[in-house]
Image (tube, rainbow, N blue to C red; front, side):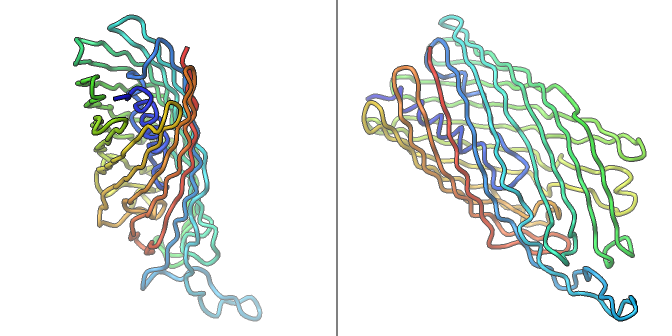
Length: 378
């Protein structure tokens, strides 16, 4: 059974698929599996374009959006609240990684990616939050090493330096708390903090079987509100289980299960909370994300994979700058491989779960992601 090239294609497929999370704040998955790439030196570059469509309609009893001005400039009523329109932006996220095999037992790797991000904009006129927008940007630099204990067992770990910054403007309608409407703006510059990852793997190379468990620590960033009061934002800890095995000649079954403690994520500047009683953004529950795929090697140069993904729904009120609750995803990927390089392209469709915010209902939404990855061995 020929698995080496197929494992390469499968890893590339998962890398592309894992970088898109259907308009959620998470934008990159566990990158530790680059340590298992074949060859003495391996270099990769990848990019994913994600086009989400997340829109909602006002709940019954939602506050009116704008006063209606009559003759003489006097208000004569209020305009009914409109739908949100698409509150998300198309975005591009990229990553790069390098792995070097020092000897038969030790490998090292370095990766750069965008672990979290957001680009939300309420453009539709007469919506409760018309004019509100939020942008979150991050970069993570991760250095890792793997030690091969024996032919079957490996352990690995590393340090991660992560930057996080953001801009937010919240404009609420006149009927929203506090009474008379509300406008708030906050810009915070990059904050750099360290985190770490640890993992272990069991392999049976003759059937391309590998089971790897990775722990990624939480990273807490410190910021100040408009009054200079400190607050923190935690990018929470995560645990990912990767698994793959050959199931037939030139055919590989693979998947992953990821838990992330998103209940620890909370953006709550004191000057905002003092006026509204609520955070700017939050997650109501931890997330469980499942990926399952089947890869097949057609010949010496072509491989393909199909992927199915699922993220659990919270069935709880989400923040007004989010508008999603879980998803089901379907993906396809193809890899063209030579002795020294390979290219993988993939597409992934997300059926985004319905969500309820304090003033809107979001349903019938989706997203599509296109990705490409280049890998070089030398």
